Every structure is written in structure tokens, then in C-alpha cells.
Amino acid sequence: MKKLTEEWIAKAEQDYLVTIREFKSDPPALETSSFHAQQCIEKYLKAVLQENEVEFEKIHDPDILREQCVNFIPELKDYRDVLIKLSTYAIEVRYPGLDVTKEEAVKCIEIMEEVRKVIRRYFVIP
Image (tube, rainbow, N blue to C red):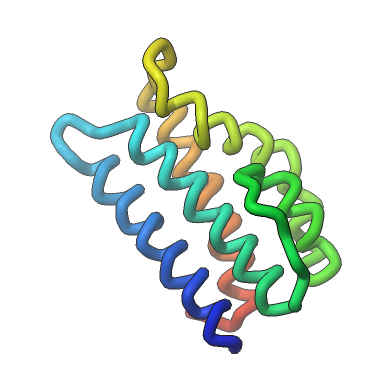
């Protein structure tokens, strides 16, 4: 595995840990955990592209990144709708006026866990 790929994965795992920690905090930081769930997947997708020497723009849309990764992980084609939903939590939750419910945060975490597992399997990471 390339060094930059390892760095992307390390950053994705930092977001993973923040997601879990903030969701379990008392009270749960729902906006923060949802945001970091999106960030985790964004960085994992960038790791796939980095490893395969695919240049990508500095974007934060997991569906666009997913589309670029499908050639390497065909299973990702099945995650289009959920990644579009997850992208909502990249920007909007950082501004006043949008509250994340516990159910929404749980869904973000479920999406993160599932896509993370697919990508880690691709990299042969337990």
C-alpha cells in the first residue's frame, strides 16, 4: 500500500473514532458524529483513488468519489443513494438551522460502518 493511501486511511480512522466517541458522549453530539461519519467515508474513498493513482478534485461529495471508485470496488455501485444522503451531513449540519435527530445520526453511523467495511475489505484490513 502506498504511503499516501495509508495516510488517507489513518485520517479516515480518526474520523471514525470521533464519530463513535461523539455519538456516545453525554449528551450525544449528533451533528458532530454525523459530520465525521461523512468525513470518514469521504477519506476512505479518497484512499481508494489514491492507491489506484486516480487524480481527484478537492471535493466533499462522497457520491462523486464513489462513482470514481466503482471501477475498483464494483460493490460501491449499490451505495449511491445512501452516500447522497450522507453528503447532506458534510456541510448543512455545520450551520445553524438544521438539527440532526438521534435516528438520523444512527443512520449515518450505519452507512459509515457498512461502506467502511466494504473499503477495508478491498484493502484487506481487518
